[in-house]
Length: 521
Ligand code: ADP
Ligand code: ASP
Ligand code: MG
Image (cartoon, rainbow, N blue to C red; front, side, top):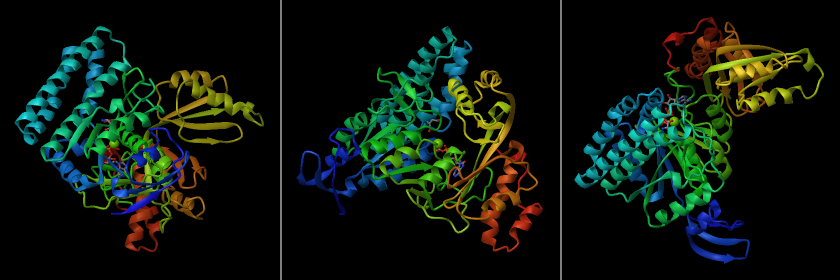
């Protein structure tokens, strides 16, 4: 049994992760009003395990999850689970249908998904648990029907009602998984994540509030002390008034990180359908391979710039509490996956991965008034702030600023306000490509290599050096796949093949480049 001495517990507030560890202490050594010394059996520190939608898409997938949790049962797992694969999309579509006035059609459109839940329950649950789950589904159906009717009668998009409906995805999967785990002898308990994750009222993209840590500990600690396995739905939370919210698409990773930080988890595991973070998006580069170790900074940059395997907000809570993050494959649990820690070291070729994000719009503002003036950039960013539009990449010259955005819902309003500052040009259908690796800023020649393999592709908005691990640029979306394939070949495949004149070969036209039209990105 490994033991660690924990010291200097400065904070006496329940909810602070250090305080949580005190709950798990097996021996109190000495304490003063501000400092507590105690020993802790490190195997008693919980691990948060998050399973994504594809890891719970059918009965076989639930079976894989059960096997994985069984192996981890001794390490005090806390389970966070997404809605079953595809259900969130169906729930959102049902809301749009209800908004168009078709409440009955909206509810009916979910029949198949409810049936999928029932099929899983029938296959994996005993009689009693199955009956209980059938009634849970009946209740959910009834409540969703009512909500669809309300929306259809007041056909204005209602973000709180949408979140209320969408939350059923995670609420049902958590209840089902807890029952399935219980059926195989594990002491699992379904926990309503809305009682743990307290958020602001930004429906559809809510942010956690500080009281989340205390609320999470209050709910989870008694269960962990009683050696139960809490099972929470990811993605969902509630306001201080108890209204349901969601954290944004793909937000279950973020939920798991928030919960991990709140309880001071030993490790955060993201179980998905690929073996870790790969050198590129496998839908664009099928031969992409697992990156064994990434730093928090590398992982965060990859996630911001499109590596869907991690929600972009996942890394910050892990950094805050220095929690290692492991990305693993629920379909191949023995494969090593990726470990994300504070420092990873540089790869021999410096570049560790290539991320990309399609559907980007660039906005260029040109004005001679900018020349030598101060205050111009402040006014420019105020416009984006006013229209609540996040900017990803920025490049500037003496008289113009280029910015990239991926949310174009306020584009017309933005354009009209920006015209007061200068001439505005907008280009859509762009893609950001981001080459990421520790040591990138300080290694000579990387930019030359990157741009020489894509020297026939028009690039713009090159940003290098702003982050020490990232080189970012923009291409036309139709050319993104070809650019990524060439970069992958140059930095990973050609190196492995030991080809001397790899860069020349790649420049000449390169094998392994797929027609961009074929690529679903
Ligand atoms: P989950 O349902 O488990 O949350 P996601 O679909 O959100 O899974 O994320 C996993 C998917 O992310 C993979 O199937 C893969 O297609 C995509 N992906 C994009 N870029 C990367 C990358 N660099 N490494 C791994 N997966 C990636
Ligand atoms: N179910 C939610 C979604 O599909 C959250 C998640 O899976 O992470 O976006
Ligand atoms: Mg995901």
